[in-house]
Structure formats: structure tokens, C-alpha cells
Image (cartoon, rainbow, N blue to C red):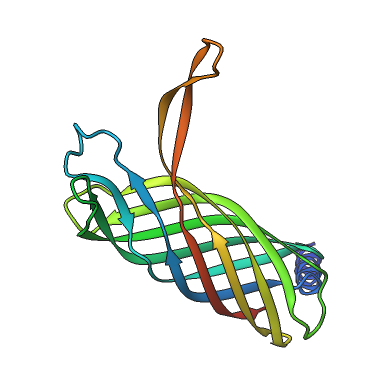
Length: 213
């Protein structure tokens, strides 16, 4: 009985391995890129008398993506990306910028990747979108913050060999900052309190070598 169970386990593993190979298996992609944009408005002068907004400096980024095929045209992916940046404050008095402190901005996203069926050595366009969170870690006497974020983007993959390729990507990656209520009036003497969600808008371009296994 024990031998039969072992044989069944081996056959099951072989079946799973065959299925993964047929679906393209896993793709591991270390990436380097450049992330730009991102600002936070400081709307209350009483709380922030000196600066009216904070801005993320545009800087290089790096990370890694791991995905797996779940359909001929769909892959599920986990992606991490880090930016080593600085935060600038924009003055209320003269609109000038002052560098305040350094910070790490890490993004962790769970994505779906959509693309056409495999086309051998031809370039393969793809679209990617997902949800996750961003961690803001100041290099100063401030607390680390973790906020909701998402990404939408696209790019191209090209395989030089069956297990080695190149990935080029551009994406939009907003991070939720805060919600505030504002009064909205429709012109008919009717006014409502509406919630205004604020995001730090960032974009990123990156490239990496795909290792398929």
C-alpha cells in the first residue's frame, strides 16, 4: 500500500510539472527603472504654516516580479519595487522647494497580466493591472506609513531563448494618501458633503531580464 501511495504521489507531481511546463511555468524578472511624480497637498495652513505641499523627487527604482500562467493569455503576478528618494517641501510664501529628508518608497502589488498567445521569438505585448500597498519609510524621526495603492500599465516581452527574455514596462502607480470632505452645491440651492480621495500620483518605467522555469 505504501509503495502504491508513493507511485501515486510521483505520478501526481509529474502531472503537475507537465501542466506547469505546458502553461509556461514561472517567470522571474529582476527589474531596474525610474519612478517619477508624486505629491501630497497640505491644505490646512494652521497645521502646516510653512509648506503647502510635499513632493517626491524622481529617482531610479529597482525590484523583482514573479508570475505564473493560469491561462494561455493570463498570468498572475507578485511585484515588488523600491524607490530611494527624497521629500521636498513647497513653500507657501514664495513657491520655492526645500529638500526635507530622504525616504524609501516600497510598492507591493498583486497583478493580473493579459497578453496574446505565445508567439515564439516575436515581441509580445501585454497589459498589467493590480492592487496592493505602498510603504513609506522616512529616513527621519517620522513613523513608517503603509497605504493602499494600485497599478495599471503595459509593455512588451521578447524571448531570445525559450527560458531567457527581456521585459520592458511602463505603468501608473497611485498611492492613497487621505480622504477629506468638501461641500458640493449644484446651483439649485442644494448642497451636499462629498468625500474627496487624494492620491500621490506616480509613474514608473522599467526593464528586466526574464528567467522562465
